[in-house]
Image (cartoon, rainbow, N blue to C red; front, side, top):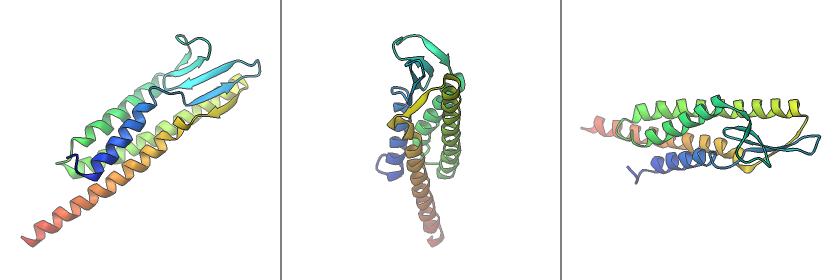
Length: 153
């Protein structure tokens, strides 16, 4: 299982998506010089670490599902076709996650009349999509190899 390159690709994608739980995606500086931090769980004021300004449950649920699917798909190495389909669904969920994040950040910045500065962690879903795509290609190559072996017998 671990010796397959697609397992490493999926593991990297899982770790990248898990890192979003720990780091902010964007900072917003409002006109009143108030700093807001946009993380995976919502928008919070920079000085108040515990209290959220606005909690975003759809983002939390979607990110949790993406990480779970990425992790579970690593262990589906015996069912290559199902693994490819699940990873394709996961790519669609990651694209939806990125779109939803962009929508919320854009909406909040307009409401707060704030300037947005994105962090490097906002690009992690895109990198995870690339690694998941590479894993799908490698799984397809494995499946083609197995089918060619069946024809020889």
